[in-house]
Length: 335
Image (cartoon, rainbow, N blue to C red; front, side):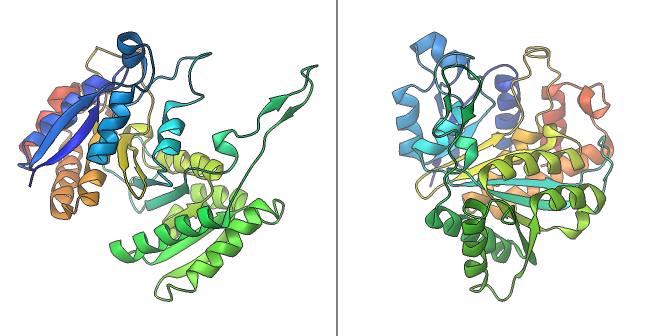
């Protein structure tokens, strides 16, 4: 049965890496069809809004979207298009794998294989209750963490570990100081952990976790944490393995899921064919996993690794002289 995917080509380098990604997917005989939808600057120019109703309806109808990076204009619209999408579709789980790849500019070319599972709809990151005093001297931000939100993200992390054969979940928190919000998150995660005796569970204060990640990242397997901490830690993990050009992300909810490259739109190199498509290709592999096409996802990841190993048509950020599409074609030849 054909699965229709909502495709958002994005801004800046977005269309280039999306074309490269779809080229590879089309070689895999996956029974996918694409429904194109606009968001970001392209949507603002064409439709007068950043997230048109037709785009939202497409995601709601298809329940799966593949998205390139988007630009949120400064001073208008939402604080973040990505945050708005997560809120509207209740995409509560942000899943960010970071894995060592060959021939990358990384201090850890092997032994890193970490998945950060970040709560995606609560906490300080979503910016609730922001206010600034009339004299401009005092700013206030409300941070809300709920038992429901904490429980479902903790359960997602343990289920992911069990489903993928991972052995350990580390609950990252700041409950020693933030005793209400982080404390509730930690207590709830402990409660959930009792239901998974086959998975090792440990706890780590966020500042110590960051230090341990850069000293001995191989000790980690699955990390689960709150929204703002997860935003920071997942980028740190990407830095361990070569940067955001190799960093995919999944935003998972009960009724919809959006898969993406987590880097920005890179307008300084847009249209030049220099963009590395790996992050979006790896996001597409997460999408295939989500669709139950696990073997196909493995084939795609293996082709990416083989192309990196051979240094075939690598983009300039990876030290090669290839371009976005030649790199994609090299990956495609190995599918």
